[in-house]
Length: 157
Image: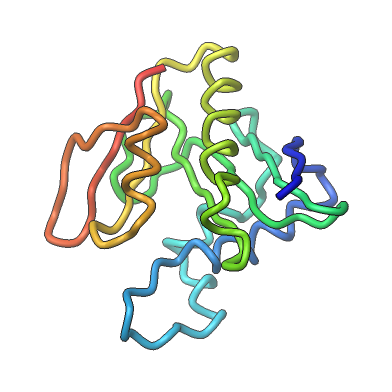
């Protein structure tokens, strides 16, 4: 599958809401939540005003000039917040583009950018049942904390 990874354009930041919805892990056998779930404040922190802060960095993967996935980071006070110097990851792809290595390449490129900009680490939280846990580990993230449902993972750059 031929794809291109590039910075997200300012005029495209609205698509992050679509990818935020796609990032919601739905365990097998669980009903898919309505798209309105992304309006909850704990989820809006990932997208509201994206691109207005110095630490907002986003990439998209595109096929035939159409975005099929995105990874974005920002420093925010979300669940598992580490500190005010550590960006939090969000990543997703449309379902039909998963399993082709696109997400792994998005992660690697974002980690390279963060390292080049002088960040020391990045973090994310992920539900334990999410298949993406292995991808995160392959790209350098380590589990540093957990609760009943989720892991907190850090990647030292």
